[in-house]
Image (tube, rainbow, N blue to C red; front, side, top):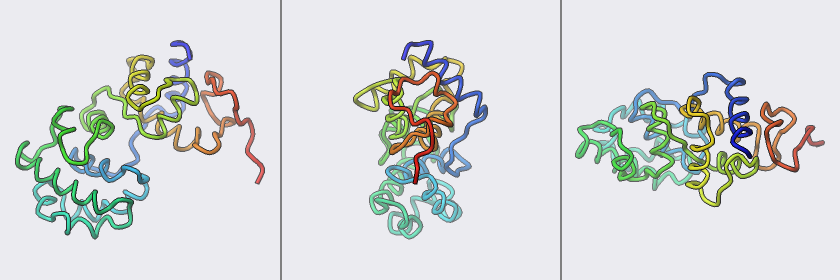
Length: 215
């Protein structure tokens, strides 16, 4: 896409959804961080079924660390890779208490040093909890960036950097929400629903699906 196309694509999504929000349930930077860690290779909907009870039992890093992996595990058994995630959540909670006074740091390097936290998770926390202009590239955004021509790249980092350059600055804060939701519900992996895409006129995908597939 040209820079003008890319801006028009994102603006179309913005007009259709002027106040986008994450679909993960949270009420503090800590519970957001835990929810994002748990959402790796799992749907937000599945995570949201587990976290209300977990957060009621352990709403703070100190309480979560006290639960430990064995105490966290029973709350999250229904999500994928739950055993490793339980260990990571217990360990990151302990580190928050020991190294950050029980607070989630507003610093990329400090976030990425926590167990189970990579660049995508750090980007989500910095954006949603602290209002920073970051671009969290998940599988949906990676697919969308390449499929549409919005920001082609061989790696999530390449797609992230392309989107950061092409997105209108005033829309950057919310852009990753628009793109994630668009990839999740419209520009789907198996069959993009181009006939209801508000940005179709600005998309370079050659094989647009212009009507629902027959079943």
